[in-house]
Amino acid sequence: PFERGRMFWISNVRQIWVLVNGDTPDSGAWLIYDDTFVEGQPEFNPAIVPPPGLIQPIRGFGKLWRENQAVRDAVGWALEPEIGYMATYRYDAGGYIDENGVYVAGPGIHTLINLAGQTFRFYEADWTWRRGN
Image (cartoon, rainbow, N blue to C red; front, top):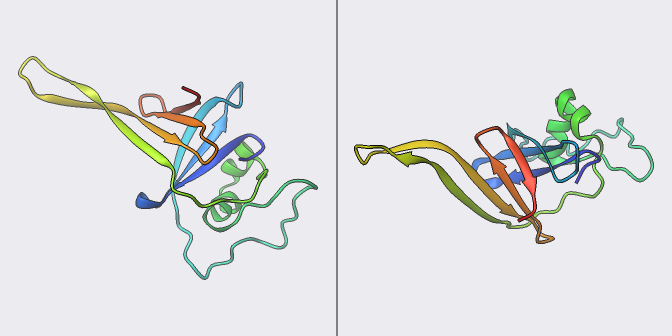
């Protein structure tokens, strides 16, 4: 978690999903970035000192946060250290079957359940996210 959002690392596609809070911390904008962190690169920048009680993100999250000012401004500082775990994930394809019986692809919905058991849904139709059932 961050001051104004969250980040998730989607390991199988090496992406970082950035959740920017909207009017509440339970929904907002969903952004996707490639994870460009490579082992051996600096995990953090010691010259960037967080305010008391906040944390500079590390590794892939940190690299994206340090190199992309828009992401940094959007989510703020990290609130907790990064934790690696295998989340529960499901993708529900969107689309429909046309009058000829042919599937026409459409935007789908990604569902992720985090370590705390919270459900996050990611909507391809408008690139937003929502927490809850």
